[in-house]
Image 1: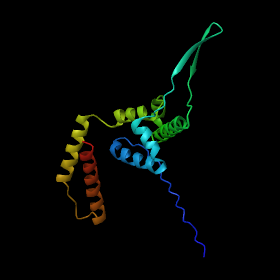
Image 2: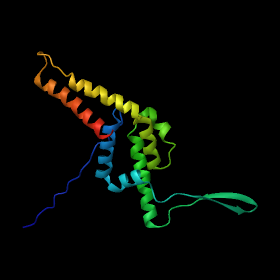
Image 3: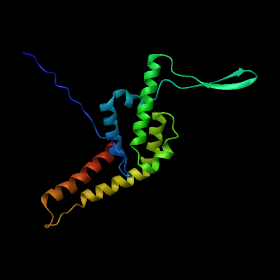
Length: 168
């Protein structure tokens, strides 16, 4: 008797960054990268170990600048992962921010720039956390609302509060 091997093709939808939802997006983009290939998250978090260094040489009385290229298989893999991670990050941004972030040449610096732009500063995070705590403490529901609607509203506040506490 022959057994067929079950092959599971996991495809995940690329999470698009929405304004005000940076913390949740970070969690989802990390999961997305890890599902695609863990090396993509590694290169985004730690940077690419290979960096192109321009070299200037004198040829026929003219200065010529040449960019070095990856040589070893490991360098080529690192460069490929960096390009792929950078491309995914660009695709995960809203259209109006594509041009701003396309200037970054590696995934790590792009990710840091996205964090600076969308992550908010400490004062903003503290204010957001305070507002969520107030919403939770003052939560009320009318008798005209369905139980599912009430639970969903409370759950949304609770999840957002939890995320704000985790990223504090």
